[in-house]
Amino acid sequence: MAEARSPGDLEKKHVRQVYDEIASHFSDTRHKPWPLVAHFINSLPHGSILADIGCGNGKYIAVNPKVIKIGLDSCSKLVQIAVQQGFDACVGDCLRLPFRSNVFNAAICIAVIHHLATEDRRIKALKELVRIVEPGGKVLIYVWAFEQKKRKFEGQDVMVPWHLQAKYKDVQSAADPMHSNKPPQIQLEDRTDLVEQGYTTFQRYYHVFKEGELSAMVRQNLSNVTIIEDYFDHENWCVILEKAAQLEEEISQSKEEIAQLNQPTK
Image (cartoon, rainbow, N blue to C red; front, side, top):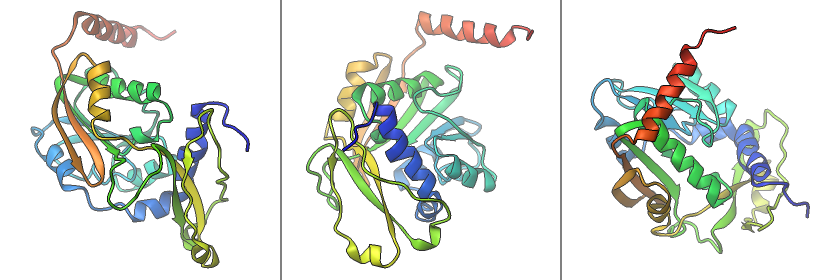
């Protein structure tokens, strides 16, 4: 089998391209906010500015109209669905967020980081989330758990199928398996019945987190946050982080960013 040239190639083929293919079907299955995520958003003071990184169709942007929200997702078709509902959302990369440091009062990142193919990339995404919130700001993160009741995984790096209904096939489908240097454990379902009904199966890459893995990653790599909560919810491991007081180097970085923005254009 052909190997992916890089983790980015794996994510492009088995995350971003897949979600572009299944966007309409996926959106139709994502309407009801999870209660604890909604509680986090509703607990923010009125007028707070929240970043929803990996906003999908915007189901969490609709929570608590007294909080200002900006969504971002790597899937342009899901962003389009969010914008059509009147939400503020843009296409972007969670590894290079297009926002200045310390500008949001809070951020959420629900079911995103588990789609990144290496630990270094997952750490970088965590750092970006913390970078954009103000000192004292909070970040809520959800990632798929290895210890799920509904699914049993043979390894932590897996392919999870999405069966696209025939009525959603408005674009060309393409989903042949692709492997990184350390191939994910492919877990395919034998669903001949779905193929006969006109379904198309796409494989989505996941790194499923074991208990304590997310919190350990935070403690070992982010010195400027405190873990406020660490819990299990809806088959996900979850943490709420609070950013510490601003360090001198962060203050300097923020001043440099502002100075660059204020420079006259040529």
